[in-house]
Length: 433
Image 1 (cartoon, rainbow, N blue to C red):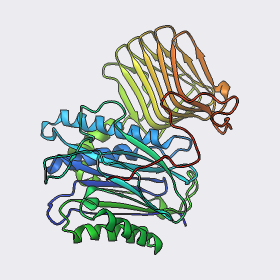
Image 2: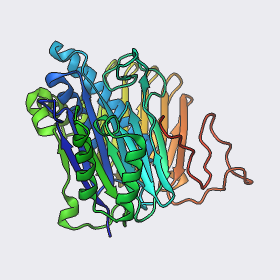
Image 3: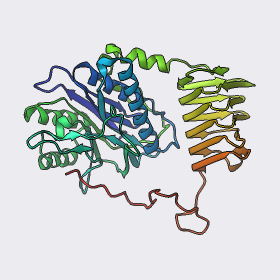
Image 4: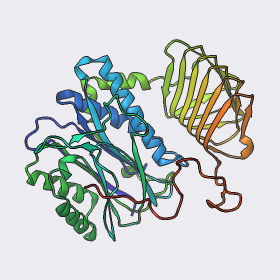
């Protein structure tokens, strides 16, 4: 059995609009529940923007799940704040979100989370809450207030919570908005989840039942549930037509309210520019090609970014002038020869969640230039060439399919400061009170 997934949502018995949104892509092992904040139309728009950012996560192997999901939520916040700045009627809107992605072999899930949406894992040993509610206590008798959301400007540090959990066939994963867990008691909900798993109910039956429980409890809020019954999954494996179908709840309506034109306007460019000036250019695309001798010059003070793309061709060079910036994020590079980036003094290049499939990546970094490499996968150790005396900061730069020594073994690199251990067992997850 492949992944069996379904989503159900309801505005609730006392609400006239539904500000929840959801993402359900079983073929890509990618799921999310988003709860919009801000009232009237604004919360719906914020939820749509957040789901759109999560949907951009590429269905490519070797990309670390927690990192790309957390980055998607950071992008979502930037876009929500940009839209609020553009339209004062949307000032104060926000969203809370939980996103989940299966790893390449389908045995581990990565979770990124902000706010009080939740993820549950129901397995043979019981029920685990995979997220913590980010809430602050309010006045006595009042609902607890969300302490983190995708419309906050004051969030500092690592404000996106990430985690991983092992899963097995037959397990049940449930993502939901607070319209479920604020209405149905923790014990009642846990017992029902265990029963649904034990009876091998379909994902559709699970989602329908849980939404029904919230409505039976009064349905005072929007309620959304995404249910996933774990089966066979391997990234890149062929899937049937039904498995390719994915849906985003509430997105069409929300985009019609104004977010769509803004987001699509940012995502539309697909060509590689020869020159980037002024405010710069951001390309969000699935496939980009470049011919022999293709080049891009990023002017002083400009920013150039390519996000969520597969790039293939002969060779491509990027020159970042002093004071300029460039970033390649969630990208697969497949040059026949090389991608060469020259970073001038006072300029910066960020390479994050990038896989080089062929050729080489050549970095020319003179003194005063800066390059940050985060989660870079190479076909061989020789595929990365660094020239110059500038700063090159590296985090998780590795060779694909290379067997590395176990932590603590002779020859193993020391762990990065603050890095999690890599033991075989799941990281501890404490249930939400």
